[in-house]
Amino acid sequence: MTQVLTDQAERIREAFNINRSKMTVQLARELGVPEAEVIRALPDNLSVELDITQWEPLLRAFEELEMVHVICTNRALTLESFGQFSNFSTWGDYFNVQSKTLDMHLRFKELAAVFGVRKPGHMDGVNTLSFQFFTHDGSAAFKVFLTFGNKPPTAERTAQFDDLCRRFAK
Image (tube, rainbow, N blue to C red; front, side, top):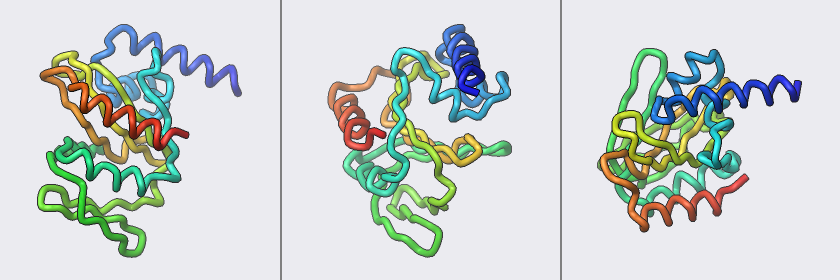
């Protein structure tokens, strides 16, 4: 089994290195693997797996980032929003973010993995910084981008990203 996982990771890295700007969801579909496995296998320390048991403190820490780009995608839809995490609450199986700019209702029991990801953007190749959450089947739950291309991350934004990766490392 370990050899199969090693071979899969090597296949992912080879495909990724052909076009590092390709969206990871597209690469996952092309290779027939869960997107979480693509993120897990990224070369050159482009991704770091974080401690998923700390999902709530991590989400609460996003408040200090102020405005971020949140993407939620599934097989039929991609929804993008620009806003700030705040006004948190829990109701039953939902963790809620209900600020003036974001309205999210997260079924947190579905979360299985989270990564800090540095990767060239698919539109312009400029590096992005993001936190990407995945479900038990390895599909994306949602992604929080601190930067979204057009210009390289500022030193301050990179420091915020690095700090959160350190604080919530697996």
